[in-house]
Image 1 (cartoon, rainbow, N blue to C red):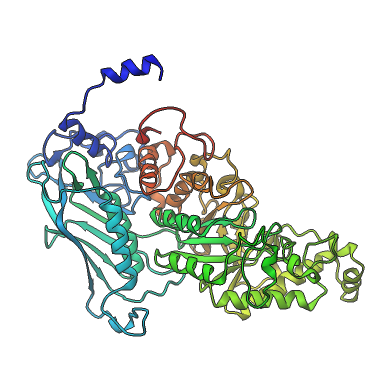
Image 2: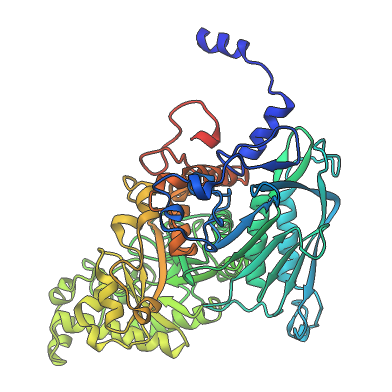
Length: 602
C-alpha cells in the first residue's frame, strides 16, 4: 500500500449517526436538503419556482406526469429505475407550502398479503397440481423472492432510532384478474401507495393483472433501503403514490448462445436482471453458423452441431428457461436464422448443405430442408408459448446456390434467380411458422428487398440503420427497433448515453403508425462474450434503453447526464443483487472502474 494512502486512511474519522442517516437519504434523492435527525423532512426550496433552466418539467410547466408534481426535477428524481410515469412523494405542509417527508420502517411481522378485487374469478387459478386455489402460484413465489431481496441483511425489526418512525406491517396487493397466462400486450400497469391512504400501517399495490403486480413489487423493493445504523429496512420520503405503466409492450434483450455457450445459471441471472429493469422479452438467438446447441426431438442429430457435448441445452432446459422467465413476467422468443446463418445444421444432417465445401444458405432445392424447419417449429410450439418466433432472414449470400450444379439446375427449372430463391425460401419459412400458430419476425432485409410479397402479420426487426422503422410502419407492418449504431451491446464503443437517447418513434408522428412500433430491443451478440463477461457488457447500458422503452416520453431526460445519479444507484442495486454491472462512468462497455471510490460515484 502506498504511504500516502495509508496516512490518509489513518486520518479518517467514523461517520456520525447523523451522517449515516444523510447517506441513507442520498440513496433515494441525490441532492435534497433535509433537516437532521428527524423522520420528517422539509424541502428547503420550492423547486417549481427554482428549478434549473434546462429542466424540461420547469421549462414547459408540466405536472401530473412522470415528473414529480413540481418537485424533485432533474437530478432530484427518486432512485427508481426505470422512472415511473407519474408519482408524488411527501405531502404539502399547509402552513408553509413546502413538502414534508416521512420515513416508514418495515415492521417485524412484515408480510405480503394478496387480495382479489371484487368480481375476480379465482376458479381460473391453477396451482399446477390440477386443483384450484385462492392463492397465486406466480405471486407466491414472487413474494419469497422479494422478501429475500428486501431483507438481504440481518435486521432488527421495528427498533428504528429515528423519532416517530411509522411502521409498515404489510404490503397488500389488490389484483383484478387471477389469470397467470403470459400474453403479448398483457396489462402491466399498477398503482403503489406507501402508506395505503385508508390504512397507514400498510402499503398497497393495485393492479389489473398479476404481471402488473410483479412490476409494482419491483418498484416497492427499490424504495426500500437498509439502514446499517438502526439495522432496519426503511422507506424514506413517504408518503409515495406511484401510478405506472410501460410505453411499449415489447422491451427486449437478445442473447446469443451460438457464438458462445452460456450456462443455464447465467441465462437465469440475465433474466433476473431484466426483471429488475422491467424488460419483458428475452430474444434467444439459440443457433447460428457456429453452433447448434439445442436438442430438437424431431431431428435428434441437429445438436451434433454444438461446440461440444457439454455445451448443449435439452428441451427440458429450454422449458426450464421459459418457465423461469414466465414467473418474472418475461417472454422468451426463440430464433432460427434461416437460410443464411445455418451451417451448423449440416453437422448432424449433411444433406442440408448445398455441398461439403459450401455450407450455407441451406439447400433450397431439397424438401428435406423445409421438413427440418417444420420439425423444429413443431417442437418449438410445445416449448415456447410466446406468439412471436424469429426466423432471421438476414445476410443471405446466394452465391453458394449458384455454384452448386443441382441447386442451380433447380433454380432454372423454377425460373428463379438467386434473389428469387431467397424470396421463395423466406416465404416458405413464413408459411411454416404461421402453420404452427406463430407470428414470424424477420430482420429487415426481406422488407427492404421484397416487402410487397410479405404477409402483413409479419413483424420487421430493424437492425442495420436508423430510418427503417418509419418506412416499415408506413407500409403497414409492425416493427421492433434495434438499430446497431445505438442498441448493439457488442459495440463496446457505444456509451450508455447513446442507448438512452435512441428513440423508437424518431420521425414517426402519426398515432396509427406509432402503434405499429411494438418497442425495441438491445442485442448482446456473442462473439466476444461468454459467462465471464456477459453481464458487465449488458449492464448498465441495457438499463438505459429499458428506461427509454418503459417511461413516458415526456418524462425522459433531454440531457442523459440528468439521470446519472439514478443510473449509478441502479447499477449499485444490480451489484448488490449479484449482477456484475459495469461502471456508469466507463466510456466503453464493460470497462472496470478507473480507481477507488463509492459505487454511487462510479
